[in-house]
Amino acid sequence: MNRVSTTGNYSAVLANIQSAQQRQMEAGNRVATQKKGSDLKAFSRSAEMLTAMKSIDARISGYLEQNKLITDKLTTQDFALNQVSNSAAGTRETIAQALASGRADTLIQDVQGFFRNAVDGLNARYGGKYVFAGGQIDTLPVSATSLSDLTVPATVISDFFHNDQFVTEAKVDDSTTVSTGLLADKLGTNLLTAFKDFQAFEEGPDGPFQGNLTDNQRIYLEGVLANWDSVGKDLINNTAKNGMVQTRVTSVKNDLNNRQNSLAGMIGDITDADPAEAATALQQAGVAVQAAAQVFLSLQNSSLLNVLK
Image 1: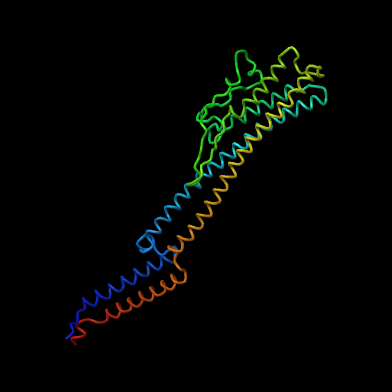
Image 2: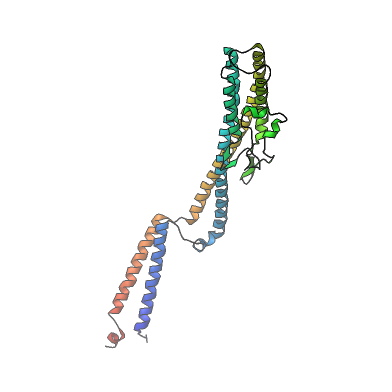
């Protein structure tokens, strides 16, 4: 004999409605997010692998963010090194032109301008910090402001450099560390020495440079061309070294991007929902909710009194 209970029927139907609504909500989330779930419970067997891959992805993202900062710093250094190198080349060209014309009307003014450009390059900043100061990032690396500073009695070239000897390094991936630091004194000692020599001659008995070149001035300028060639070559080599580090960092960045893209595909294979399957599940869940609701409406029209009648 089966027992008829309105309360029991209502409880069963309501449970079916709630279950159908839950399935509809889960299916709707899969369609909206294109993901199978929002937590590791949704991926059960693959949860451990997924956790490991997400950890690797986070580490790669950290390297990529750091590499962007390193790339920006190296770009700043490249600009500054080219500025210093061009100043040396410009000084050499100005001397050569004075020799060719036999006149030095603006020679000292031109060389003074190149000197200031060179010092500005050595005092370049990135993010408010001096890039060629070593660890003394808040200290001006080169304090000379004019050619005449270089010939002040009882001073030597090293007095004008205030960087320390700390060379910065950066880890750009798990197995690659690059040196990103260059020091002002290593870059500029020979350059400032050449400028000092020029200024000392300008202030000496055979100076100043003005009008037609004297025989002694011509002999001096012809003699320093080779030294300016050497200074320029050293600066170009340092610029090239910085460029090699830039190329290395770019190569590592590209490799990290490829690895991250590959990892994203692997994670997607685990977490991404099949759009067609998710849409079908949503439709089926909707039908189930409608069916459960219809049963609930039918139950409203029946009661134990009706059965007893």
